[in-house]
Length: 175
Ligand code: SME
Image (tube, rainbow, N blue to C red; front, side, top):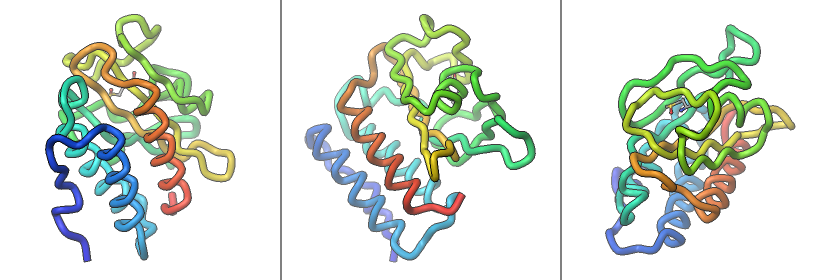
């Protein structure tokens, strides 16, 4: 049984504690459920509420969600479940921060989006961004994308936790 409290995060927890709760809740939510739309939707909610329970800069997260492989066009991502303002519908591999993560299979930690060549500005408020590939059977099947309305929103601690989340998603979802 899924409860709304799964995405309730107490104020005052450390970043480490908050990510630990995200990972634990994600594992619980995915028990007996492998549908990617369902699991990525609940994960977008978990991440959005988790990050907003933390002090600045993470409470300045303005977009968090997913792009998945576009089933109709090779080497293209298409918008998946997210929280935030409406966003670009498709992104080619190699384009922008998302397409770079998809093409290289490497997390893109971008402290200042203005310095990232080819950054795609979906939401003009975004100033920093992290994109983590979700890899299944050696192939990128989706990416996690989080934008922050201030510079240097994310660091290596976010990267490590989000990479762990990506690996749980890869194991737990049928894409
Ligand atoms: N900034 C991303 C585009 C997606 S939005 O941030 C939601 C990029 O450069 O790929």
